[in-house]
Length: 405
Image (cartoon, rainbow, N blue to C red; front, side):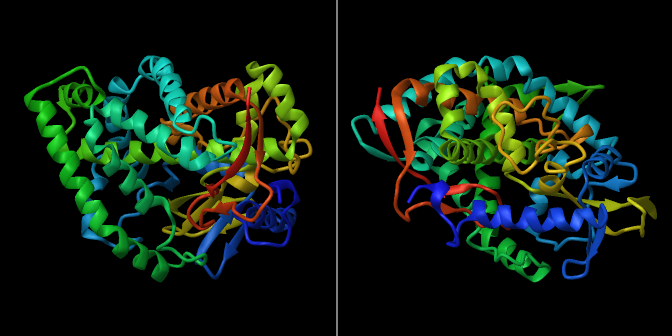
């Protein structure tokens, strides 16, 4: 059966939609609630989530001392500016931005288009393809590996690491602290392997600089300071997340949305210039990461509630993205929605630096897909599989019946 006809069965998209429906009902009773099961405060409205994300002085990204300590993960903390507050955040992000500029990202378009074509060439002639395995998963992995100057023979390592880190197989749906600790223990060996490989890769580029992103990271300088090796390791690990999983989720989720709205899909096929707007709506409607966590630095008032210091605050992006005070008919997918001030990529100083790359890859992927195939339809059987909703809102397997153009 097609995705739009599925009902009652297991499926992340539908579990997610049921969840945001219940969250919407909760939001109507107030924008801020305390979740006793998770021992965290939930912020549900668009203005409240925007404030949490844009006020690092009150809502810190540093969870040191509040989250489970796993030594292997400490190796990535130094370069992970997502978990930092100013001024450390500014220093790291400024250095990284020197190497990962908008011009660098824009310059990747011809190569992204070529890789997309090569991947689809591998399934040419097939009447049925798995969009995730054939394109959505390998495309960003290859782009990142090439961007970093990773040898082609080592690309399978990135694929293996990404599958372990983002499969969600180690994490149950409750996502309580004990569950999280078990998941961290399970993926620790992969983290050690990544750390060792990336460190060696960085040292090679220090010894023999080239033109790739890794060499630019090594040479970036701010106020006389350069990135340390371990800071670069943390950034590369972050890039693997921001540059990979968001694109994979975006492409799969977009196809789900287009399959549900054939009129919108037909309009986009006739005029692909509408793809950027449509993909923003996909991001609003099915945000890959539906929540972002923060920690209060002092007692704070928000949404009529008083939140104590050192409390965990979950900014519910999915709920904010469907706040009727900000979006007309928020539960309806509208491929022409504009303006669309969704918060999927965050807000403020932590706005996702990988957003331009994900947007570019998503647009190019569908431009090429529409050019290659006159029809893309989710297969009418039960083969669609979804990721663990406690990890990410994304499709794991998406078999399509395709008709070449």
